[in-house]
Length: 199
Image 1 (tube, rainbow, N blue to C red):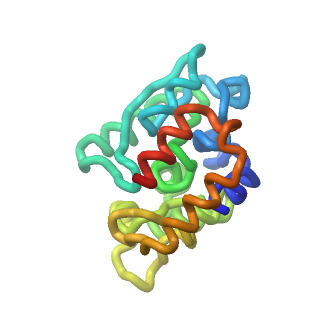
Image 2 (spheres, helix red, strand yellow):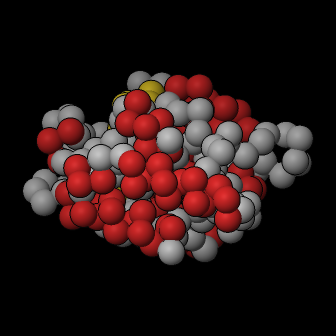
C-alpha cells in the first residue's frame, strides 16, 4: 500500500516567490533523466540516492532516516542551499520517499524566502508539494512547531519513525504488501532500503 501511494506522487517544483526548488524522493525519481534539465544542482539527502545520479552535478549530505542532523550541520546545509539559490541556481533535493527530510528542508527554505513561521511553512509545503511532508515530531520541533496542537505530524499510516513505533501485525502487513508488489522492478538501492526498514 505504501508503494502504491508513493507511485501516485510525482516529483515537482515548489515556488518560493520568483524562485523555485525541485522536490522528489528516490521512489519518484528512479533515474537522473527524470530530473528536469533546468535543475542545476540536485542534493541527495539519502545515502543510496547518489547511485542514480551518475552524471551532472549533485551534492550528497546524509541525514539519517526520519531525523534531522545535529543543529550545526542542518544550519550549514540550509545556508548552503540559500547561497546556491541566491547565486541564481535552481536546486532540487530528495530523500527516500520525498516526505520527511525533503519536506523539512523545503519548509526551512520556505521560511527564509516567503518569511513564514514554522507552522505556516509546513502547511505551505504540504499544500503545494505533498500532504505527507515533514513526518516526525523532531522535524516539526526544529521548524518551530512546539505545541502539540499547533501542527500535527504528517498523516502517514506507515510511519516507522523512532517516535512512533509500528506494531508487529502492521509490519507483517507491510511486508506482505511489498512482496506482492512489483519487487523485481524496484531499483536495487530501493530494495536494499526496504530490507533495512523491515529488518
